[in-house]
Image (cartoon, helix red, strand yellow):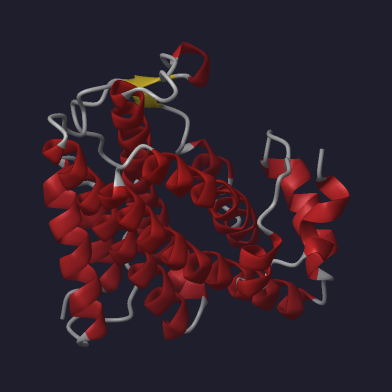
Amino acid sequence: MRSVAQAVRDVLLTAEPIAKVKAARRVARDWRLGRLAHVFDVAMPDRPASPAQPELLPPNRMPKRGRGSAHGRIALIHALAHIEFVAVDLAFDMAGRFGGAFDRAFTDDWLKVGADEAMHFALLDRRLRQLGSRYGAMPAHGGLWEAAEATAHDVAGRLAVVPMVLEARGLDVTPMTIERFEAAGDMATGRILRRIFNDEIVHVAAGTRWFESCCAAKGFAPETEWRALLKRYFGGSIKPPFNDSARQSAGLTREYYAPLAT
């Protein structure tokens, strides 16, 4: 039987977006159906394969999106699609890189997250095509893998930064983004973003639950350890406004982030 690590590595090394989506969903299904062995016999790549497009730029070189215009809304959908595309790799790398240190439930959770992210990307890519564009038609943020590189050796650090900071930020900003699209009459994009928002709560909850499990195993206070890990691995700041109710639903209480809010 093929190992889950081999299957995950294949997803990470698939560059073409639609092929990656199909591979991610197939691996998650095969794992769920017992077709992959809980064996971690190959190393994960340092970086996943990237498609030829979009061009990846540092944040300070990203073009400004025109707020309120149709082009600006398409550019925002493209940016969100890119976040979801990278999130596929982040979730699969989480499973493949760290899954051997945990029971099967860890792999269950992160392959499910990866399949969700693949579905989110597919929905946003289809919406771009409906609007006359496509994923890859615009430049994209080139720094989204940096958090994975910084935490490649530290599962608690990865959990602290990726689901509990980066994805939790989506809980804060997505409701306002939905309002923006719906105010412009784009109810179809609004429906996609509502689905993504509900899934994000589940993803942040998985990250918080596994982070707290890591802390319990070492006798650490999770809120204190989370702040220490962010100081070590996360270069940004934790900024309000916060969607406290959504974060609370995910187990990410104010005791974690309120002391760091700037």
